[in-house]
Image (cartoon, rainbow, N blue to C red; front, side, top):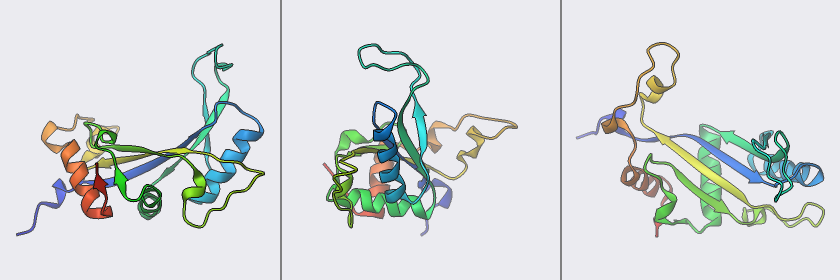
Length: 170
């Protein structure tokens, strides 16, 4: 007996973020690392507020991010989970079925070496899961809410990622 394909979650996108906290040379190095790891050109993230304690002004570049979809996303998730020995904490899953975790050092990725000119950068990885038919939430005409029974739950996300990537939820 086959299950309904409309009820099977899938990876919609993977967002990789490096927060530097300042612009300039350090941000350019982070962008270089991001481009090398993902194969895509990163977009700068901009500060929304002013915080004098952290020496931030509104509109100042503070980091970079890349959004991956399709095969590139799945491949990057495999590599990122490998750096964590395929173990993820249970609290990393939210109630909408998303998974967020951090990689403390970009040199943990397979084939990456430490470069003293670049330094060490950590990153946040966010995996967004949805079921087919989720487009009704984003379309322009006749936008509707996704019913509760069609949203990805925390348990479904854990089960899907455990089967697909052979991870262990701690």
